[in-house]
Image (tube, rainbow, N blue to C red):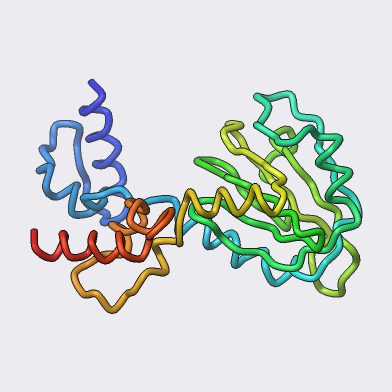
Length: 223
C-alpha cells in the first residue's frame, strides 16, 4: 500500500515535470524513478547552510534589543535554559558572528555565549513574515539598520527544533563532540564524496581526530 502510494506520487511528479500523460495503470520502472529522484537522500546540511548565509548579512553586528517567545498553541519546542534566563542573557547583546555547526545554526554574541538553533525537519530562520503566525517560536528584535530586516525569527511548524543558549565551555564540549565539520574536510581527495563525510563525522570528532580521519580515508581507499 505504501509503495503503491509512493509510486503514484512519483508518477504524478514525472507527469508534471515532463508533460507525459500517465495513467494509474502505467508501469514505471523503479530504476527510472530512482534516476529522477536520486538514489540517496541528501542530509539537511545544504538547507541549514542556506539559512546561515541568508541571515548573516542582515544580522551580523546587530544588537538584540528584545527577545520574545510568541504565544504558540502548538507543540512546544525544547528550550534551554529557561525562557526567563534565555531572555536575560540575550537582550542587549550583539551578534558578532553567525555560522553553522553540523546541522545547527550558531549565533555568537558578545558575551561569549552561543545561541544554538537546530531546525531539524521543518524549522526555518526568517527575516520576513513567517508562513503562519501560530508556529512562531522565537523572535529577536534587532537594532535599526537601513535596508535590513528588523527582526530575526525561528519558525517551526512541527515543533521538532531545539533552541539552546550555551556558555563557552558548554559550546566547546558540543563542538568537540560533533567534531570538525565534515563538509570542510580536505576536498582534494578524489572519490571521497562530501556527502559521505557529512554522514560520518566520527573520523573528525574528539581527541586525535586528525589521525583517525586519515585512518578512515586509508580504509576507504583500500576497500
